[in-house]
Amino acid sequence: MLTVTHVTKRYGKVVACDDLNFALDPGSITVLLGPNGAGKSTLMKTVIGFLRFEGEITVGGYPNKSPDARRILGYIPEMPSLYPNLTVSEHMEFLARAYKLTGYKPRIDTLLERFELTDKRKKFGDELSKGMQQKLNLCLGLLPEPQVVLLDEPMIGLDPHAIKELKLMMEEMRNEGKTLLVSTHIIDSVDMLWDRTIIMDHGVIKANVTREELDKDGRTLEKLFFDVTEGENQPPELPGIGETPQGGDAG
Image (tube, rainbow, N blue to C red; front, side):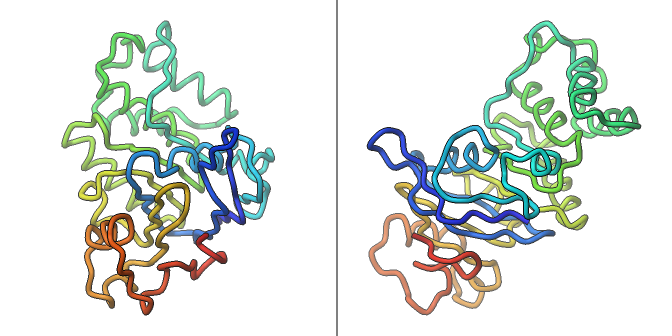
C-alpha cells in the first residue's frame, strides 16, 4: 500500500534520508523509531509530499504527490496547526468541505465524543489547551478516513483517556485493512501495537523487522532499538538487520 524506493532527501550538503527502501502492507501498523535527528520527521514529510526528494514513493500504486494518492493518504503532524479564529466545530466542517466529504456529520460527532471534545465545540483554536489541540489534530486527520495514515509523535500531550482511545482506533483501522506508519521516539507508547518496526539512525534504516521475526530472535523492541542504534554487535541471522525483507536494501 505504501512503497518507498531509493528515497534520498538532502538539505544542501546534509543527507537527512539516505537511500531508504521499504514497503508496508494493508492492515498493518508500522512503528518508525529512532533517536532525535534520525530523519523520522523528514521521512514522514517526504512521504506526505511536503518535501522534494530523489527516488520514488507510491501510495496504493499512485505517485505520492498525485491526486489519487492524496485522496487515500492522511497525515497527523506532531505539532497541531489550527486556525485561532475557527471553533472546534468550524475546523471539522472546514476540513469536511475541503475534502468534499458527504454524510460526515455523524463521524464528526463520533470523533469528538471519543476524544472528549463534544463540550468544546464552540471553543476557538487558540482557546484550547495543548492537549486539546492535539486531540482536535487527531480528529481532523482521521475525519476523511484515509487508507494510509501517517502519525508523527501522535501521543505527545495526550491524557491517558485519549491515549487509550487512540490505541483502540489504531487497532480498529488495522482491522479495517488500513496501513499505519507511526513515528515516535517513545518505545513504551507503542510496544504492544506494532506489526513491523523500522528503526532509523543518522538518516539510514538500521532495522526493518516484523514482530514475529523479533519474537523468534528472543529480543524485545527496546533491546533491538539500543542494539542497532548504540551497539556494535548485530546478529546477522535476524532478518531486517542491514536488509529490508520487503522493498530492497535498507541502506
